[in-house]
Amino acid sequence: MTPEIAFRLRAATKEAHSRLERRLDIFSHLKAPTTRAGLVARFEAMHASADRSLAPWLGDMPGLDYAGRRRDAHFRRDLATLPNVAAAPPPAPPSLRDAPEALGLFYVLESSTLGGHVIRKRLAGSGVGAEGLSFLDPYETQSGERWGAFIKVLDRESAAPGASEAMVAGAIAGFAWVAAALCGDEATA
Image (cartoon, rainbow, N blue to C red; front, side, top):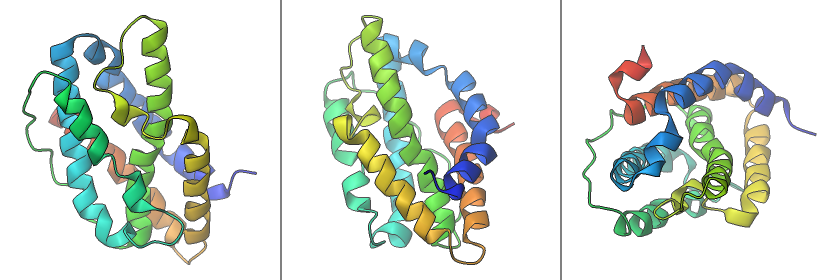
């Protein structure tokens, strides 16, 4: 049974998620090596910025394995296989007031592992190679298991008074920030 917080986060971010998918148009960016490299560099810069904001809140959270969920090793490996493209620094991540808001922002990043799994399969099905894209599917065959463990943490942490509302606020702010980081300022309009 899926916990209520998972439904709340999905419902609260559905429109922002759809808008981001349309604006980013990830498949067209991933087909050519130069646009792929640029997009991967933007993803890497965004994740590095997020890690600096999230680690103080989530680094020691029981059951989360925050360090094991970071994608920096994937990005190093991916970027080494692609043309060298520098990415502009992303806008600063949303200010986080507490661990539930941090979990909301992390929900945006962590849920992208499920989408990344689908993206890599779709690319393979259309004959497009996956060079430089391991960050999209960092857990590979363990994606479902890792997602389930993350949802258990969200469920546990959402039980505190006001926590679920803070998670939703963090996720909404997280989608706006990811859109700005990956698509440019116009994506936040």
